[in-house]
Image (cartoon, rainbow, N blue to C red; front, side):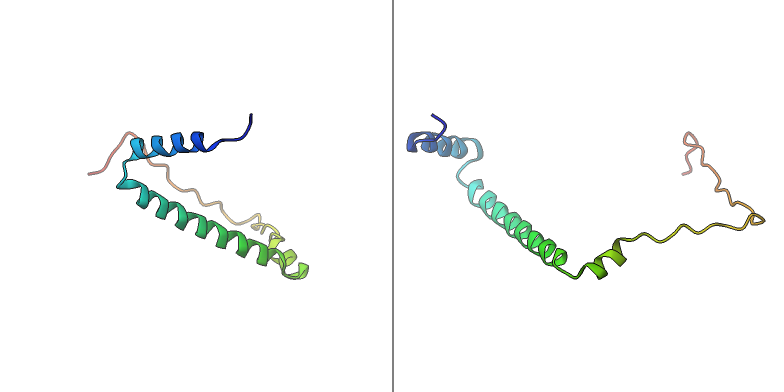
Length: 88
């Protein structure tokens, strides 16, 4: 009951041809193929990066400690632009 028979697949294919037209389907298939290739290469790169030694990934993932300003340094404030005033 949960599987498609060949008639179901034929009906789905005919609906795609009717909805998108026979001229657009090859372009859509090419675009889908390109996006799947890009996705596959990105997943491969992520797997290669995760296979690197832990010391290099730990140092890259550790954030730098926040820098504190001296108490005597004045805080610079940026001017707030009026959203209703437009310059031409």
